Each structure stands twice: as C-alpha cells, then as structure tokens.
Image 1: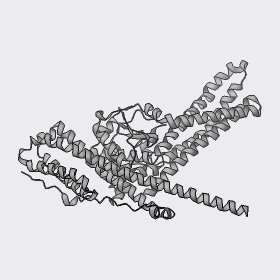
Image 2: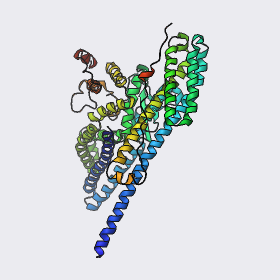
Image 3: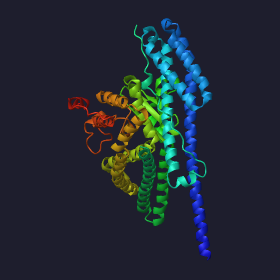
Image 4: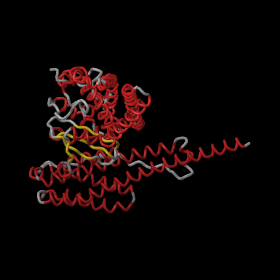
Length: 187
Length: 324
C-alpha cells in the first residue's frame, strides 16, 4: 500500500519535472524567435538612417539621373511608414527599397568620380553590410523558426505545446530577387 | 543540418570534460608514483596525489578561463577597434548575425601570411584573429567565407575543445620534451654532483620523464582528435550554410594555397587552431595521418561537390598543391 503510494508520487513528480523542462525549452526557443525578429528590425532602421546620407553624397554628381534618387527616397519613405502596417506590407516595402538601392549602385558604377569618392565608398560599404545583415538576420530568423516549429510538432513536446498555446510560426518569404533585377541605362 | 551542428556541440562539450578528466587521472597517478617513491609510505603517495590533482584542476581551469588570452598573446595578436578595420568588423558582424552568436572580439596578427583562427571557451567569450596578409589579399566575398568558417568553429564549440587541447596538451608535450632531454643529457652530468646529497631527486626526474614519455603519445592522440578532418570539413560546409556562397570560401582557399609565406607566430601547440595549416612544409605531407588539416585541394573539391560542380581538373589541382 505505502510502497504503491510512493511509486505513484515519484511518477507524478517525474512527469511534472519533465513537463517543466519541456516547457522551459519551448519558451527558450520562442524567445530566440523574438530576438531574431528584433534583430531584423534593428537592421532595417539602420538602413533607413543611412539612405539620406547616401543620397546627399551622390546627388551633386548625378545630375542626369535624379529619377533614380527620387525612387530611392520615395521607396525609403514608403518603407518607413509601412513598418506600422504589419509584417507583410513591411516586407514588400523593404523589398522595393532593396531593388531601388541596387539600381542606384548600378548607376554609381557609371561615374568614376563617384566610385573614387571616399565618402561614397564608405557609405556603400555600410549599406552593403546592412543589406547583408538584413539578409542574414532573416536567414537566422527562419532557422530558429524551423527549430521551434519542429520542436512543437514532435512527441513528447506536442503534448505540452498545444494546450499551452505554442502555435506554429511563419517563415520570412524569400526576397523576390530575380524579378527585381535593376535596369542599367548605358549612356 | 541542424542535427549535425547540435551533435557537434554535444561532442565538443563531452570531449572537453573527458580531456580534463583524463589529464587529472594521469597527473594523479604521476603524483602517487612520485610521492610513494620519495617517502616510501602510502600516506606520502596520497598526499602527492592530492597535490597533483589540484595542479591538474588548476591547469584545466586556467586553460578554460585564461587559455584564449594565452593563445592570442602567443600568436602576437592585437585587439582592434571598429574604426581600424570597418569592413572586417562589418563582415564579422554579418556572419555573427547569421550564426546567431554574439559579436566576438576581433584581433589582428601582423603577418603577411594569410591565415585566421578563432578561440575562446564559448560563443559569449570568443575571439577571432586574422592576419594582415589575409585582409590585404582577400576580397570581401572571400573574407566572408573565411570568417564564416571561423564563426562556425565558435558556434560548434570547436573552440572550447581545441583551446583545452592546445594549452593543456601543448604544455605536457613541452614538459615531456624538456624532461626527456634533461634525463638523457643533462641528468647524467648532474648525478655526479648529486651523489653527496642523495639520488632521490634524480629518481623523481626519471620517473617524471618515463610517465611523460607515456603521456606524450596520448596527448598527440588528443591533438589528432581535435583537428579531425571532419571538424574542418564541417566548418567549411557550415560557412557556406551561413554565407550561401561557396565561391567566396573556394576563392579564399585557392589564394591561400597559392601563397607560399610562412606564418611566424604559429607553433606546434597552436597550429591546429588555424584556418589552414600555417606551417607550409607540413602541407606537402598532409595526406599522412598526423596532419592537422585536410589538404586544401580536398576542401575545395568538397565545396565544389556541394554545388554539384566537377572537381578541379588535375592540372589545376597539381598547381595548387605546389608540386608543379
């Protein structure tokens, strides 16, 4: 009798401990997703801050191609406001901005003065790294989402994840790079 | 993909503990032999065992907490700030984000031979060192490949195990060398003057020499484990997983293979940490079992296999191996 009680108590305690461990593991994974998401936002803001400097640095040289600069400035303004309109609108606006920046850099290639300008070079490097950081931050975000989604879908975690409200997260859609190849005007 | 890197972390943690344990036991035995031999009592043996175990633990803790500074100092690496190499910092930050690890400390080694290594006890306490030659000779894309490789070592906890191996095993190897020479050469001369004071000291030195002679090959075995080719291949593959660009790493490997300069600061205890073997003469023998790195040509061909490309043609391969 008493030994049965002990066995039952031990079993209950063991199950509770395992449950707590699994729960903590899931919470940790969910936190990693939030962290990864915040990282993307930081980089996007950084890019928004850098663009006006770049536009100022190049605009005197690029008298004939003001429309490229206007597009970049517009796309930046759209991206800044789209931040409040939810992740999908934001992602679209950011992708448009990426496209306009690419065409700007393609045009810069046509101006030897500009290519040699230390200020422009440094801004270009900063924007390149910001672009890369955005890309890598999204890639990392997808990796932790994958890890989390796998974790909540497998036994025994799934027994705890469902009732406690751990729901599947969405991946960042790949940037439609190929469809936005910048058109380079050769003059 | 995820499984390999998690299992690699687990293996590295396990091996680090195992290494510390083995070393403690071996030094404990050594202590017992010395203590018992010296006093002739078991109590003496036990006391010496205690001292030896304490030394082993100090060595392990010292390597764990201070080994990275030691390795960096031994390689004459200097920490730099963002303003001194903005592009390098940018590349490191990009890939730290991709790997999901904190930004490591960045060091530069003033040497024209292109090479790099990472060290530290975990991703939160990691350092990455790059030679000035690497910075000058590689373009941005190639630099990304190399940094991706090094940060994979950080993320996989390779740095912890290779650090312990470098400092602890390197120390033992040096001691073994020292004592063997002392016993067979200096020891002989010394014994004559020692006769009046008794030969106890010489016996101890002799015993230490014998035990270290036994320890040294075991140490070598650990070095081999630390530098297993799989570890390097995995870091190459992880680098591509992070950068999504096999060309960069491939280009870096090609440039480094063609470079004939020797890295002055590298030695036997640190060579296994580097991106490619810094001691070029070894490269020719790298198909042997004791090599610390896989041949560069194999690494390039594995990268090409990742993207479904054919291996390098044999003429080009021979050129890279420096045999032509």
